[in-house]
Length: 147
Picture (tube, rainbow, N blue to C red):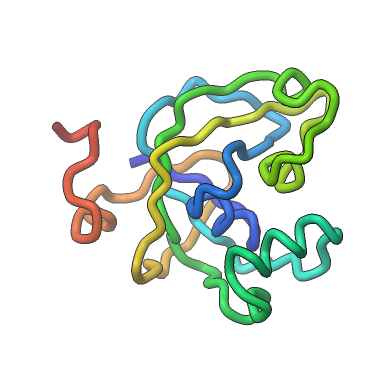
């Protein structure tokens, strides 16, 4: 299964479904299951809007509670497009406050968001990388790529 590493709190936000798009400076042709890995890097200083979303989603101790250095969930990557076309006039949507939708970036659209009940410790990597399918099979069963 393909995987991507994200800093916290964005990794947990994406698998929760509160964040629909992961914004990157590069595009991808990958479609299908994508494991989301939370890096050991944790950004605790966030803007007011994002802070409100985090408290609402994970509670007031989110900065102490969210896991790092682990696979935290799986999403289905269904689309990738220029980020500036997703919210051309800004937005009040939570998704907008969870990413950088500026010119030159790409929005990776996720669906079928699944958070692991127990994060799986794993060493991430830059870019897209592969993880053994059996890591997530125990919690989610077979992925679409295995059927």
